[in-house]
Amino acid sequence: MDLLDKFDATVALRESLPFEKADPFKVVMEEIISETEAVIDGRRTILAGTNNYMGMTFNEEAVEAAKDAIDRFGTGTTGSRVLNGTYGGHKALEATIADFYGMEHCMVFSTGYQANLGMISALGGKDDFVIIDADSHASIYDGCSMGNATIVRFKHNDPDNLERRLKRLPADKGKLVVVEGIYSMLGDSAPLKELLEVSKKYGCMTLVDEAHSMGFCGENGRGVAEQLGVEHLVDFYVGTFSKSVGTVGGFAVSNHPKFDVLRFVSRPYIFTASLPPSVVAGATKAIEAIKRSSNRRAHLWENARRLHTGLKKAGFHLATPEAQSPIIAVHLPDPMVGTRFWENLLLEGVYANMAAPPATPSGVFLMRVSVCAQHTTEQIDEIIARFIRTANKIGLELKP
Amino acid sequence: MANEQIIEKIYELIAPLNKKGIELAPHVTFASDLELDSLTVMDLVADIEDEFDIVLPLNLLPELETIEHVANAVEKISNEG
Image (tube, rainbow over all chains, first blue to last red; front, side, top):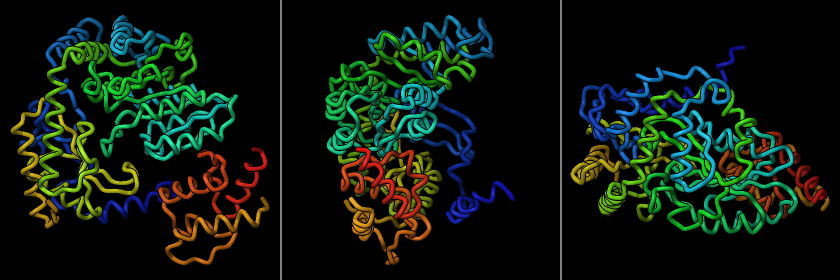
């Protein structure tokens, strides 16, 4: 029996999509011109789908620090954090992040995905409950599968629905509520005040994933919990370096006095090689820069609002009533229109993400744009103009 | 609550989702008979939880293929609670 036969339906689905000139899963960035432009298939293209929210990928201090770390410490650590893979740079990065969040402890993981796997699988033990938002990122679902806790799911961003479920759980059991600050597909922000208050009312510990909100939400860029003034209700933050920080890696921070024990029990922390010294050094400088970047934050929000307003005025069907994050998602009616829109938009010189189930909630098809703080106002206007041209070209009806 | 009553309640909750008009019976499966996608199943699970005031953990779902499986799980969880 061929073990790959079970994927025939997936292959058939992909082959049914009418891609002619480009394939969203085979895009190659041939040249990176800047944080906001690349050469794809020989064309100069505006990058509008890279999650590079704060535009830190070419931050001078981060680049210099990364180069210097390669010279001094080499290309990699060749080991786990708990063996030979912890260098001075890793400890300095953990101290920088703890300081950024104003918390006592920080653990750096090799990816954001592993940070969620490592935290959720370790915190949720056999007799515990982990309560998650139904639209959670795959890393949260996978963290649940990896651990031994009983998993309970509540309706997306719905505090009443969460409370109904919490009421039914035993009062004397360990409970972890996991939510995100910004949800990455629709770009909608969570009502963290209500969600965290109800979690605390029922004696739960809380984990907030600020992967898509770190850098630009809140006065210091710590995320939605800071923005809403509810950081005191957060027991654990999880975040990533692969978005606003401009490199790769993940972290968890907490004030819990026993936090460090997780270094000995979290398998995705232990059984993998640590981040290379260059990545760690670059991330440290980028996070320090983010802290001072209030002008950049302000420009990012201006860009997000300008794009949202422009697309809405043009008659696109937007996923959120206003810009709640730098993620601006446009609803498209079906996979066929989605495919043609994505392809023609790329030919127009804009790279956005085509998002389809199962990555999207409720089976919707989206053209997902993520805005960068380094986009100029002219680039935002150009993205809007090219969206409109693409809609006209493929016959997508706009309803201004 | 007796198993038959639970099954009747589940039929009621499924009725609006039964787009193909399949005749409901205890052995009817959610995936292959009713052809419910995973998102619809998720909403149905939430409805069942609220109807019976129980928690149906995500971990259990892969084993609940038929209406009868769900009814048995609901009965077991209700009795434990």
